[in-house]
Length: 283
Image (cartoon, rainbow, N blue to C red):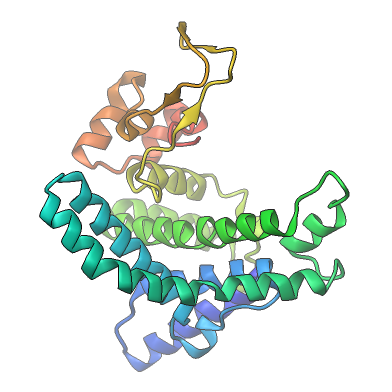
């Protein structure tokens, strides 16, 4: 299923290249990832790659993300008149777009009614959804998260990786050589076969570190009884946050710190020193 969408993406790009058209890779990556995740979640895709246009749901999602970011920053200014104006001007637009977002609820309900025959995310949820499983409301909430977490984030990473490869031709040439030497025919490229490309893995890992798709801090709550964290006792029910930079600036020989601050792209060095195994950017 995923391979079909990847093939369609490549086909579109080849057509653009043949016609000499400029290509917006950010949009292409988003069309592909949203098509894939919607098919795996709803049983049908948004059809973005086929019609080469973003679905209204996708447009509404990005509008809400932009509006939400602006509102948050305005509220943080703590200037009463600005906060009031933000609510008056922005909330009506937000409500309109939230109406479009309800599209996913209908799609999820339709997919639930189709049962477990189709091999996708929902089939596994329904197959193991006994009396201890999830309610329909919980399934709705979970799949709404999957739609966002599995699409825009992946497209953002791919866009960042493409940008970094263009900025570092030596890295791009080495990656190009690894792929070309391994595959003489693009039909041989599968999810399983690319898993053996060590330099590609290093490039993706370094791209995740320098171009993280989730720039916000993800909080964690300590258990009621408390917990020992890095040798320090933290009481229970405490919300913990960590500066995102520290995830990517590993102290090992100073390489990660220098690379993060200077914006240096170092997949080879990270692979050689073993830092790729550390996955400093991971949750």
